[in-house]
Length: 219
Ligand SMILES: *Cc1c(COP(=O)(O)O)cnc(C)c1O
Image (cartoon, rainbow, N blue to C red):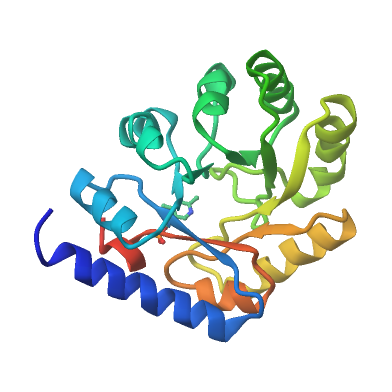
């Protein structure tokens, strides 16, 4: 770890937490997105006291966190990237929250993996609010049916919704839609907002913001 990394990461984190506290009461929780970050930056972020992290690939998350878990028992790891059914067991073994449930087949695979592992993890459903063909997430009009399968048939502990708005559109309407869908289904959790729009997301009621580059520096 260099002398300069830790102070600047600590300041960036402090500034983001202050902005979130100003934007909403209570403020959303800050998920530090550590994908592609080198070990020294992850260590520096842990040294600031940050314990909530997000990763978007199971294998990379294992490399970053499998051995660090033991040293940081209060670590909380969220999977924020698309999950293949054949990686469900690995994801359930490593993560504390799965934010990217988006189809029935995955709901069944997660339920099976959780039963086998004896772990019942909180789950968020990823909604493709912009209905973009290349993007993961259930379309808004398929959410009710997916929740029915996930909660009633599979017994998953669905706690909230997650979205990644289209890059070329204002995020506000997408955050508003996600908040409305969560209210309609009685879900409290809202994971939305990234480096460019975490304050906006906080004002729309985010309970979790997922921030990478604004916290760690450009990837
Ligand atoms: C990478 C990533 C983020 C963080 O993106 P930044 O713009 O660097 O803050 C948030 N959410 C998801 C799902 C991601 O993959």
